Length: 194
Image (cartoon, rainbow, N blue to C red; front, side):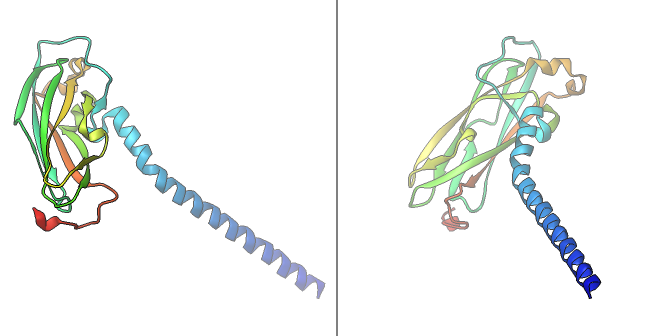
């Protein structure tokens, strides 16, 4: 009988180890899934992957003769009761020259609404060289009922683009924003206000 007890005891210890291992792996997977978004975002911001523009505190130190046209695009999530559009269609700047563009947002709801913009550039290979100095997309924006605002974005094309032969064919870059409701906004609220 003592052998049977040992066998049961050994099986019980093995089951506990397996259960603890599974629990630890599960917890690690959940932790990694939460960390994946900020890690991916940081990776995109550093490398320009997926058309993610770069950030800088000031403009470029040099300006080149090469010109690039920047087009502006805007979309609004259907659950955000805003009208959102660029105030200009495009700008043509020299590489390294600081540009200033504006987007207009209007809250169509009868209550304050908070939104936040996501952004990217196309072609995506230009993301590593499209640099923003100041942008409304860095923080959430709250508009009062019926409020209309003009929001600036200050940017430049990094002169290092001239050193990358893969970007010799880039003459136009599109800067695109999409505004979404911010966390405290209920999904679908006032969508009919559009």
